[in-house]
View 1 (spheres, rainbow, N blue to C red):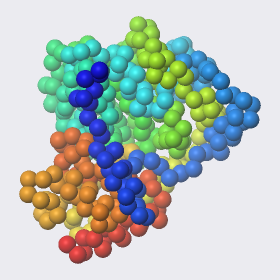
View 2: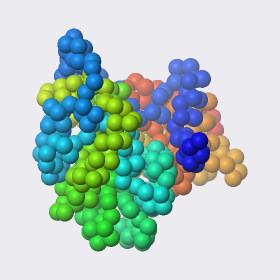
View 3: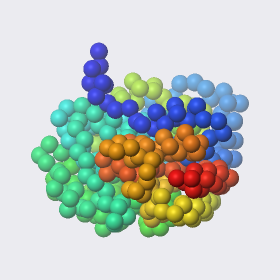
Length: 391
């Protein structure tokens, strides 16, 4: 029996989803999904693939044409010096990319430096690989970024890798170029790998996105991981990708790909080709609308009399807000973030995720997804207004 799996935590997001299924007419601000429709280029490519019977086995590593396009995208857009398309692997979404590489690279006893707060599956992947997560807090006062000196002190002789996620889920923090350069210096100095989760690369409202694999000498020790889910609004289609320069590590990753998925859905991969070959203006359009929804949501939050507080995020599409410590709904010694989440769901029909589910530094916060339709956001805000006006 895989007894080690007993130590892998369930994400609280699963518990929240189960709670939301019992709510009539809910406001689904709990799940990180955009409400936009997929671009026509994606839908047409998938429909064409079905009509042409592209429904058979493919190479485990992905369609060659898709990998060509992905390699070119990483070179051009991310400035990562990807070589031959053999370095590119197509995965079943971003979460699968993380699983593949954590399994391929980590050994029992290795330590992986993770941010706190962190997307819960990340530390689940770490434990599933028999490695040890080491949490370093992101500092809210500096925009939910690492204190790089603090990060440096967390590295030990057992540290194998640092995990980066910028723009960050759940906080929306974006690491600056100086942050990335300092982390690259640390990785080179201590001979560390970097897992670079760049799922939200296109969802930025300020600052720049810097792929650490683009810096001198870093691609050799970096695993850049991406997904098409957020950029093209195809979260359910499940197309992720990564690149690996090291041949031995890449060979291991190919085995994990083979034994976990054989090949990613053929129709989904043709959809990915359609996305990359088609017009790219949807990305800027989506981001502009997400900015408007962010501002709408935070304007509403500010009208609640201080029950929630925090600066709007620089990137991603989550409001990770602080709960007023004086809020009376939390029982003594209980988790304020879980108490608030359950209160909002049961009494306001409003989905959210407790900050404690993202780590110790997330306690006292809740995460809302503002990538929903404006009507749904407005409804949730009106529900909050009624709910907290009676407290």
